[in-house]
Length: 129
Picture 1 (cartoon, rainbow, N blue to C red):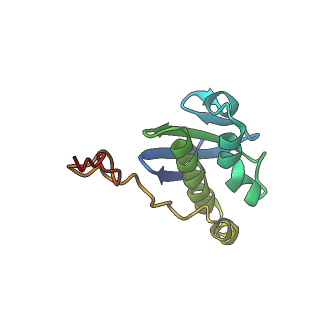
Picture 2 (cartoon, helix red, strand yellow):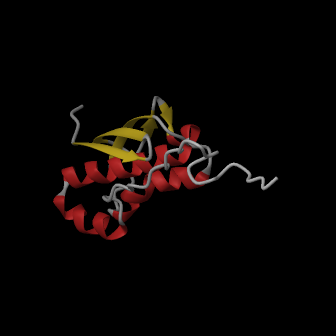
Picture 3 (cartoon, rainbow, N blue to C red):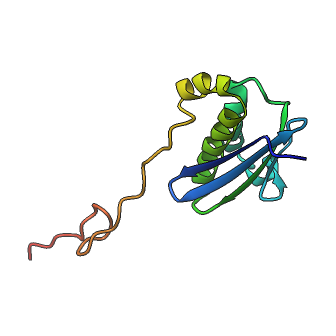
């Protein structure tokens, strides 16, 4: 079966490649079904949001390869990639996906740790004596 749309999504340090094919609404992430890969409900809902916004929950089979980062970042990357792929399939989806903010890459990243400090902003405890 031929891919209808391909999208790359990013969030924090996670990258997701999304492939959309005609089908019945099955979502596979790294070889596992959605509910097994993201057992927490909020993450699986986050991945499905672009499908709900475009009313295409049971139209396509979706294959996602995601790596890097943590669970929340990976879910965000999947959502971003899925939104981009849905836009590629049909330009009519663009307005609703843009209005909900699914096409915008969340640019927030972890701030780097500075030398002479315990963390990015946390200082070592000051001792006057």
